[in-house]
Each structure stands twice: as structure tokens, then as C-alpha cells.
Length: 173
Image 1: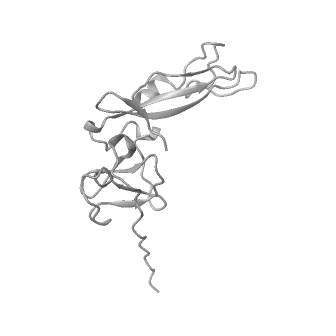
Image 2 (image 1 turned 180 degrees about the horizontal axis):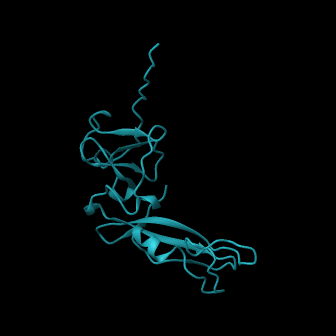
Image 3 (image 1 turned 30 degrees about the vertical axis):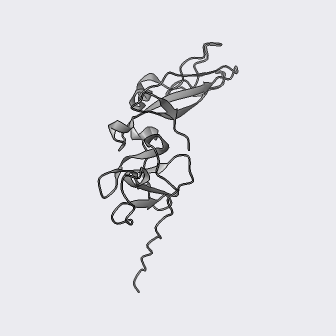
């Protein structure tokens, strides 16, 4: 008995065209035409698609000409993933990804770091020390919660796009 191969239908792409700061690029995966794969960050998207199609630079001509890969079928890492280590298929003329860490200490104090390049995260640590109470627990990758230690600093890293115009915008999904 032969196995049946099921080819998924071509995914519906959200309306476009989009501006460069409205799409998130893949870290390394590219379309058959050489452009980076991407998806719109502010719309309901169900697939990675050719960034040139999303930007309206070329016409959509089917998945074999310009790659479209459903999220449910493919594991493609985005440029915003910490494990991508700053890799991106975003063209330099479309800006660069920057990160900023937002932190909340157990004492209630909140702060955010300056913008930094993705690779710098591992060199600078995450949130730093709370300036209100001096808590450092959880402020870097080596901190572990142990009995008797203060509660950890909660932090989350957000990614931003600094466009060629110098404007920095948060990329939200």
C-alpha cells in the first residue's frame, strides 16, 4: 500500500502591501527567488511568505514560484527569536532589529534597558540590578532562585525595528 501525500492548500495571505516595519523576517530562510521569508506582525497570519510579495514589490505567483509555508507545517525561526543570535534576512535598507528588556522587581520598581543589538544580550545580561532595592536575583542568565534569596526580577525582552529613517518602532505580534 502506498502512502498518500497531502499537499496543503495555498494559505490565505492577509491584505497588503505592507511597509518594512510591518513585517517580521525569518532569521535564515528565504523564498525561492532569494528574498527573505516574512509575515505581517499586526495581522492574523497563518504562513510565512515571500517578503517581496508582502511588500507589494512582485505579484504572488503560487507557492512554487514564491515560497509560502504554513506555520503548522514548518518550523522557521524569526529574526526576533533570541536563539537566532541576531541573524535576519531583512535587507539592510529596511532597518535593523534592536532589543530592549522591560523588568519588574519584586519590590514593585519597573524599568527598561537601553536599546541593544541581539548578540549583546548574552554579554550584558538581561535586566541588571534594581536601583530601588539592589535586587540582582534573576538579572542575568546565571541567577538561580534559592531558599533565602530575594524574589527574582521578572523581565521580558521585546524586539524593535530601527528604520533607515532613524525611527524605532516596537514589533508586536
